[in-house]
Length: 91
Length: 375
Image (tube, rainbow over all chains, first blue to last red):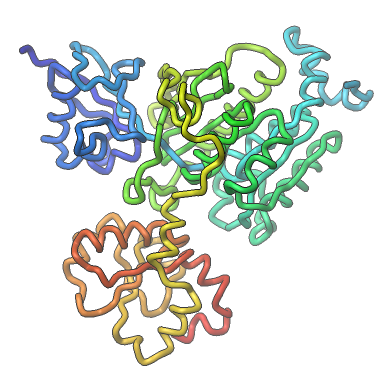
């Protein structure tokens, strides 16, 4: 399976894992792989987004480019931008 | 609804807009808009809605103006510190536009009052600062079929979308449930760029005006995300969920639900300010560790005399060093971070930790000023 390097845009509440970085890169052929690679780079980050039943947490949305997806097996292509979105509460 | 000569002059730049005109201005005058929260988002939204000539504006806020609000809550002046936000905002808006009606609602929205309050208005703008209220307002809007313009902020990032029940997905379609207590990003901890809510609140006012006048296209099923640092807007499409708890095919929420936000849970696991005050004056004081989990700059400004500072961000590491035989009381500004601290302590096996209910805000309201420093 070919691996792709993607740009990942990180929601503000998740940046404590990426040392404050808004944008990182990750490798993988699917969204699942991308999240696994993120977790290797930034331990604990995946669990903030995916629960024990391998479901995307209810306050998190994942998007490939501008299309949201709930399918972790969704394939990613070179040049795709993965967005990790998080519900915000501040007003 | 007719406009007086003074109103025609005041709104002349609207009237000159070919797609807006007299008809649009009359629609604004006839409209009733409710703004939840006179804070960072509510401030610019309210100012622009009032200036635009929305005929009736409601303001829901039970809080008082704090000095730390002034960095972004542009409705208020330095002299307003300590005054109720809703009525102070009402005065400011009435001075801006005497041709409109302003209603201030100094109440905390809850499952019992939300339907009655919202029912009087045509459009709702959500600018609150807690998840429980966001879900409460969303659910009530769906149940009442009221259009909702929602925005939220965190640090340098903002989100906005509009929901017209029956036509577009709702907040629960986007984020079905709020994060659990420990995962809730906290504005006071995280900070927020002062001008950020200015952008997002202004977007909300724009959406409300478009909704009322029927101009343009709305943020229906579109989440607009703004990154102030990169200075970019990204739009994400989202659809109605057939299994949405409130607007889905088989809704399970058929009436507003009581809050489940961590603040509510705090009361069970916490200690009241008056009880802590009594404890600190008793012989049990030496069995207590007061741990202030706010950031160092907040701690330096004001703290309980016997407290030590362990910011929430490094708490887990620092808790390894505490005396496990002493009872721990976590303290923060409002009780939210200290509640999260309790959850961290429990995870580490420290079962003798509680938090100060309502934080220092409640402490300052409950303990007489001349006794606060006797500790």
